[in-house]
Length: 428
Ligand SMILES: Cc1ncc(COP(=O)(O)O)c(C=O)c1O
Image (cartoon, rainbow, N blue to C red; front, side):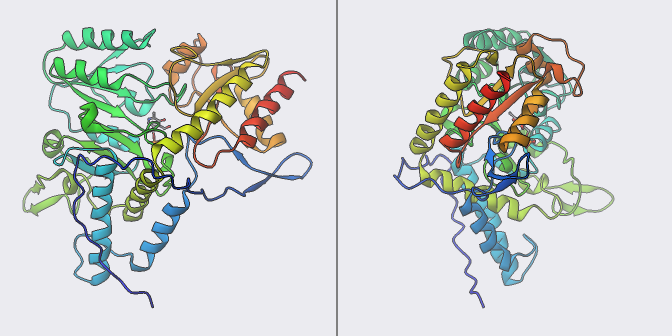
């Protein structure tokens, strides 16, 4: 029989920076030895190059979930020992996530289903009359939830993003929110979020950063960057257990009406409900996804313990190899907003002359055992802009691209296999 110990739920300091690189080895992912069938019935090792959609589970994440399961119980309202233990684990997960993003001590950390849920949650809490400023380059999760928004064209260079935001925010009266992605899910390119935060605040606006594609690849410090809100998903952060998070300033969240109404969100119920003032219970009605939160926190811990220096070095080596390999193939074009030299995370989208993106992705899977994503990546206006097309929506695969994305567990063999497979295909 296992012994239950309630570990300390001492809050981590909101501004605690993750420690420097420890020199520890990079943790393994589950499924690294997965074999998949290819044409002819052979089995080959799966080359997962689709991390930007959903990353595989880190071993320490799976271990943390397995360790929490025997005592799994209800949270917050149970007097039983297992319930207290699970509650402590759930609340510790909140502290871990807070420290991971370098949040201020008084920021809310609300567990959501994913990034989409987080942006929609914030959208429902904006003060009346808020205008949102958003670039056409955003993922639909950050482009669509806003009731009243000003949409900005894809900027030709990073400074133009700052200038366009400056001009748009200057023209808006009343509450305003700038929404921007930190790393593009289409090109991987990094956005100038510190400069955009500065501009937003100069106009009395707030900024929400969609960090779904940043946090698996780079350290984020909300306090240092002076961001108001960040959102991201566990399943892109090696924690595929159905939790995401919204972190940021409490006041709008404390005032906003919960979209999920039910037990836990209320202080008392008579003729009407009296909602909690604290954003966390207010917006986490019902039984929360405890294992998802524990998994998300375990991923944060694992990345921090590994150290960003080691992670970034390996990712940059592989992505440089992938990009130069693809660039060496006639007819292959990488999609980029700000040019070859602009810094980016481990995401590359490309087209191959003579083939639709769907054809390329299908051949890569069925003949080479490679998993990539094809389509418009839930960023229709941006992909349309990059391809210079007017497309007919999701079903129009002539206006689509192939996306290869890497992370922990990606190998040089995976990258080289993709390059050679694309080369073979376009020279058929
Ligand atoms: C930049 C970005 N934002 C938001 C999302 C939405 O994430 P989720 O599907 O986990 O809500 C994605 C997912 O691809 C993304 O890449």
